[in-house]
Image 1: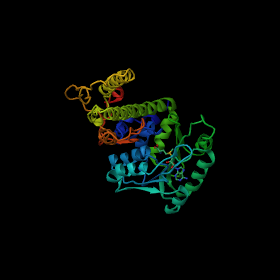
Image 2 (image 1 turned 30 degrees about the vertical axis):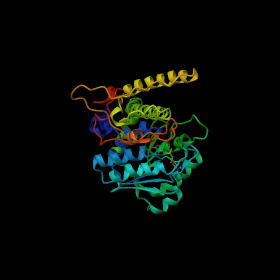
Image 3 (image 1 turned 120 degrees about the vertical axis):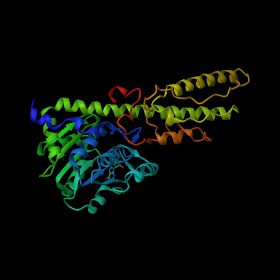
Image 4 (image 1 turned 90 degrees about the vertical axis):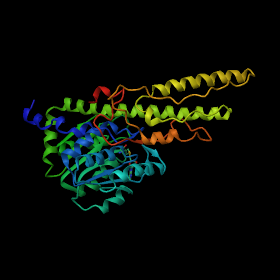
Length: 376
Ligand SMILES: C[S@@+](CC[C@H](N)C(=O)[O-])C[C@H]1O[C@@H](n2cnc3c(N)ncnc32)[C@H](O)[C@@H]1O
């Protein structure tokens, strides 16, 4: 063990690591790297950060959140067509519109969402101007090689490049690992392999001192460093799972409400998903009761009997918390989608908002039943 190197990286000196994200989408595979994103802003303090490939904005908004939290004088630019690619699949305008609604008021002063092909956007950046670049576009070898070659001249002497997908070998169409094998030998580097991997490479001649110290420390203790970031990431992944569960149940609630209306039995009361997020058990119980009623009603109809009389019911409420315990983070976007009036046609399962804006970061904000173990 290298005692000097280890002394360089002490997570307690970077409390931003423990922040809960203000944006979380239900299908991003990146969210397990959010704490690392915060740390990289803290260590690199980039003048200009650029991301290639943003989609819902989980990674990008994590970097922006850290810039705000740390009051770092960083300009940020996200480049994406916001059309999708062969791995994400094509997606519609709502993705960018939802991201803008979250991003512009919080980060608009120092950050720009640039809707463009990467190759078209590159001319807008001066050579040697980018201090931190996150490459997360197409994950095929030729694509990521092309992105690196195209953007490398734009990197400053302090330049650091992040490669998402550096450890993913599960799919032959992913080839970032092949590029990473070369790049990681050429430059001071470190890889955290969980969540398809992030490779961190200091490609400039004058890497930020703190970043270099972190790389040295991490390479001196690779296993424990990787375990630390994986567990920190797991905390966010658990939060994402909880959000996904609550949103899916809220969508089911909408379907059941629609069915009640169709059968002239009165809709269900509106849900406050923001209130229920972090404590979905009452909603789960209410859904089970409704499904049981639906099943009984179906039997009655088949047997030629009248539909059951549906008693009015109260909206499920979270279990009261002990005094002083922080409420879980309410996801605004989820609340909007679920508390709106029941639709004319039932929404398909999972049709609720794909991402949620969360309240300002607090170190205990992510406390939920599934994440309380790692929250302070
Ligand atoms: C894997 S997703 C990004 C995920 C995101 N970083 C996150 O946190 O979840 C890749 C994105 O890159 C975009 N993309 C891929 N190739 C591109 C290109 N050549 N120019 C612009 N955008 C591109 C796609 O539209 C897609 O939104």
